[in-house]
Length: 214
Length: 214
Image 1: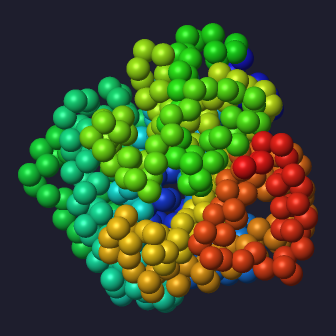
Image 2: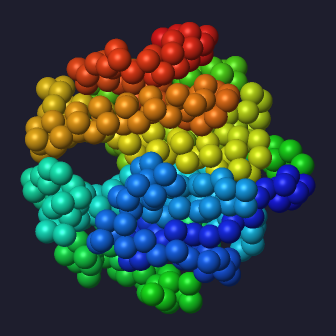
């Protein structure tokens, strides 16, 4: 049975956070599925995500936020992507069998808890822009995460020696997460080491997808 | 169609990490579903998760690890739980409709990225036991997370004013995650503030479940 038969309310709009990496994950996911929705831009630099109105929408004060018919609200990028996958199942980005689905979740989380979290810690604790958002900024923690970023990139490079994409032989949400983490290295003032050739081959392939264009 | 019809390989054994919070999440999840599997204990204090043999199983050197018939390996607690949910769908712990599933994922992630991650940072960066595992330990980052833990507990308390469980009116994986995060406060030398009465009411209910007994 197609899950959309269960009476899932349709999405009506997406609150987007511009260039921040989590909103970008969801926009790429939507582009892969050719989902078009009204977009409401929230300017993080102007602290529009800290206003009373936005806090009612998401008490965590984070972006993106998906609003559904009837007023239900879904936050957290992966929760939004899963909901969209149920309503728009093709192209499949979360796996087709129980084992493939488990492998996609495993790899998506490995990238999130490894590379993505480390790049974010470098950005949050070392970038002057974040001084008023991450209180206190702890430079030593930002520096420690530079080492973790390097380790995680080397790990992904070694894994990509034996397969085409992060979670297997086809493009999934785990590739979107890894791509957004690596893009996020630029504002975090980190460079992708040129000697990681498997990662470079993967990067060239995924970053050429139409969904990835800024 | 029941997803188990797709020929999902059966789990054969679980590598467990004793009292660490992520292994505990999976053991509670299994107990809720009355799943019994051979358990292989890995002693983290003896660095058995850093051995060459275990690293072949999980290059991230983390626990738990689920092994399947045919040799496939699933790591990351939530990936393991999702796989078990597909094979053993009752009692349902991830949601029954697309919207409920999205809400469960949203709340599970809010608890993971909020409370759970903050308690873990306190433990990793302030506990003497972690000195040789978290290099460098950064005490200032541990201290900063004490504030975040307090904020997240207050947030959950306010949410639990309007409903019985973390993600809605019934027990789900989001409650398991929150319960393990709060249990993890004890070795992290953090106390649950007594004035958070909704949280206390929820704690009394969930910690009395048979699956939660140590």
